[in-house]
Length: 288
Image (cartoon, rainbow, N blue to C red; front, side, top):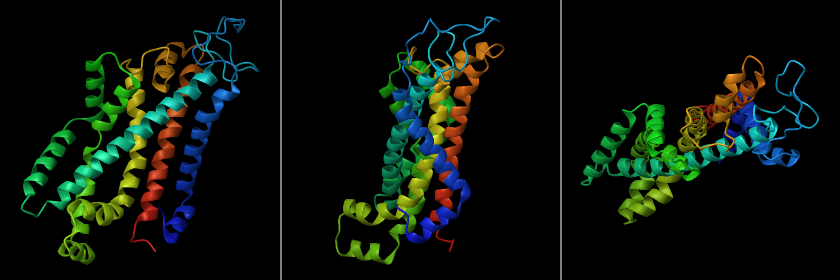
């Protein structure tokens, strides 16, 4: 993915390394943390004592981050929330990238040919999509669907976020289309599909990876907003957004219930943003 010079620039970028470290740490937490907890995320442990003042039980040997208002283990729920938030974000970003790259390459390839109508229609569709505020569009669709499942969230997020990617890839495709070796391949009679797959896709892969890295952060926020507004996955499924929504009622007595998921969301968004910026700087051909 990265040539030696790009890899060297990436290693010198402290922000990128910090972002990579945060992303890896959260990934390991999502994968390994449930195995370290003796409590499933939906199980209530009514043996957990309250403090003398009547507040919820805090961190202990049994519950590393304490329990919530239903006596469920916060550590376990955060880990399962990480699985959902990171999993949804990565899969939705993959779907968005595939759709956006496909539309962008087709539009850019046909931009100056007899089939220019393809470019016109696809770009007008992109313009319409970009005219809607993204989070507002996602919330409206989520509310309209009512009974939301994991597959529904993936489709909603993935199919409403590809417009910016398509416009970027179209611009890059127009540049690649005019390169000498691409023109030579066209003159030799290679099919459009083969030209896009063999020559255009490798050249747009760098910008696509950078956009996808930053898009993951956007997906995490979108999924958290849906859960926070109670139009995401229904309870008792543990998600960071729903944990934040449930914990806000206990800010006065147990602020950790809202702080813990809030910190997770913050770290995940920060990590992917730093990683995306680092990849952008590493893949910039203007740098030495």
